[in-house]
Amino acid sequence: MVLVLFLCVIGFSQTEDMKVRVKVRRANVREQPNIEGETIAVVRRGTILQADGKEGEWYLVRLSLKLEGYAFPGYIHESVVEVVGAEIPQPEIKIPKKRSGEKPRKFGAGLIIGASFPSGDNYNSGVNFNAHVSYRFIEEFTLELSVQRFEMGVEGRLGRLSRGDLTIIPIQLSIQRRFPLQPKTFAYFTGGIDYYLNDFALGDTSFSRVETVKNTLGFHVGSSIEYFLIENLALKLEIKVCFQSPDGSWSYVDPVTGPESGQFDNVKLDTVLFGIGVTYHF
Image (tube, rainbow, N blue to C red; front, side, top):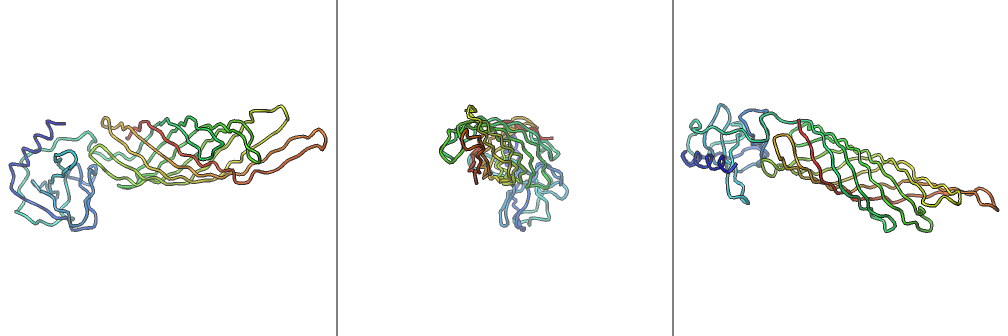
């Protein structure tokens, strides 16, 4: 990578001082000079880019990463920019293929493992497992379907659930907004709806008491970061805040008065899910 960047910088220095200015609200800079090329950056109206050549209808421009102190090349279409410097000659250097590949990857699948942190003081944290599939239907937006599973220990409070173990399986449909940070790093903001499968097991069943937590709808918000380790495999760091307030019920047989029953209304099970895993894009 260092050698590639060094060669690109040398190639840049051998051309004239040429610039183009973005004339649309948002423009994509792509890895290759075609519409199927992977988007490596999004630039706004008025941005001035150093141009080092032209290939067909595409200008070869350089993008600066201020934190890293170097520039990397990309292509932008002539319809979204205007020339503000010298006339652009044909490029004198050949841009190497980056790790992210020529063709856009629309599908993904992955696994995540992490921890769950309930908001209530009578619940304990546990381990979280997540399997997900995704589809990038347009450049900046992705749909993701995930199935998670986590458990939480219940301490038991008067008027609330008794001591026991609660297993929660959220089925989540998310829409994600995608932001490129660097050529191999992307951030996502996530939101969506959930269906929660809840299963509560009492810790003490000696009194023939039964307690249930109903399945319910909910929602979540969150964010994640992906870093591509190799061409198609990305390391993923994710955090989600899940909201659900299911109803529940209890019943038991009193030896004197007979059967007794009642309801738990709006059991608060808001939970923060944190995890790390991998996603394969294809």
